[in-house]
Image 1 (cartoon, rainbow, N blue to C red):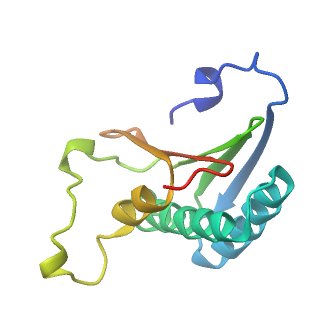
Image 2 (image 1 turned 135 degrees about the vertical axis):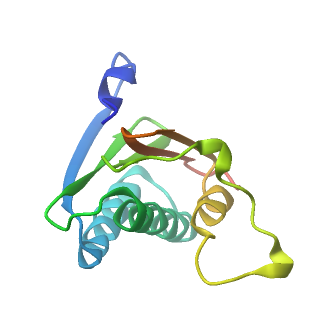
Length: 150
């Protein structure tokens, strides 16, 4: 698993880090949504921005549950990094990973159920990075700035 915390510059003022280790079960996505809602509200995001963040994190967690881990007894991790004017969220799993270059933008004319998660995340958040290594899991990094329109 990628150690994201080592990659973050912790010298910036007013950084807080909240980490959740979440059972690999869909029913816990609502707990994550409530958590991010509380964090974003405290930071000054408006209701529309909070809803966007909740949808994006739901999609990222669903990807971790569906693609990241095969056994239900495993967990995935969500880190929330708060800075003065932005929230950065990492969702990472210890699944088999994939080649990030294989993630394509969906053809809107040929929509099917599933396969839109990354597209939705990128549409709702200001910055999105996906890091995946075969056999070492996937990390979805999502950033939203207070007051920024996507």
